[in-house]
Image (cartoon, rainbow, N blue to C red; front, side, top):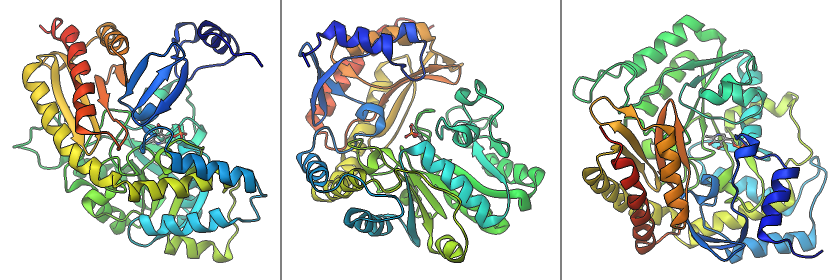
Length: 441
Ligand SMILES: Cc1ncc(COP(=O)(O)O)c(C=O)c1O
């Protein structure tokens, strides 16, 4: 087949394929030709710094030769078997996941992505507890399918309601925009009291699980206070409620630990994950459950299944990816450079009046833009579009949030980034912030 021109790629993609979360006539995709490490290039040879690891998933960076080779070798040997059969890579990956996840998390149900992982976690929690409600935070995203979107608290749920019954939402611990009107000095962890009150109203014996993102991702990198996760763990134990950590975005070294909950030494009953598990090289999701939950299904039917459960190519990609995290010291790098990034962001905040808040844990960070620092008025979406234009013109690709919950520029680069590369990207971000600074009242 002959090679398409840049314009043909864009035009045919727009004419014949749907793009997610967008008005179709307004999409403006970059036609990507190749990628390496923290960079990718479009079909005209323009280079971009990838400051969002694509969709916060290419954690090891692009085209790592070890993972590419693992997929090639597996494809040459065996691409697929019936999900009721098994393979060398499935066996090894199951064991590796038990090793890298905390505490007694042991047995994995494989899916193809984050939404499917959460769908199956809902089923498992309901079967195990015999209860049906699942509590989740308002500022959260758990996936776009029927059950996962019911748990999602943000605007993406509203458009597709009614969703799965039984999803109940509660307010986040969000220190910059505290929903309880508190300041750091006066905070009495009203967020915890609120959660317990919601549990009482909903009936503790009706609640199967509480699901939370390890650190809230696409709703604005909301890092909870240090005692939050441990206290939710205590509440769950008190009422026999399962605790699910959605580590789809916050897992795999992103926060400077294997999983975000490791920052607070909390062991959830279930971890759901995807994205960084293969770093995006092949689709894979996983529901990793405690030994107790695993034991429960020894003599009970697991009503869950997918044709591609334990797909050999994805398992091979995941095994090689986990090796890369270890061999290239990527989790240590995320922690070390995360500290540096945190300092840089504070410095940026001190020099740009449009920056209301910066939040950072590991290489998981955001710059929240406001039109007025005192009132915290959200920077208008039209200005965020201008900010985005400057970033793109200057060869930086990242995730921008602009809605009635906040306006933000995310800094979530691959974990293999160097200090020099981080500086190079942040310099472009600062150039874009000048556009926003002009709008400040
Ligand atoms: C925390 C979280 N959970 C679940 C999902 C859904 O994952 P997927 O898009 O692979 O279905 C996402 C996607 O961004 C996510 O960030």
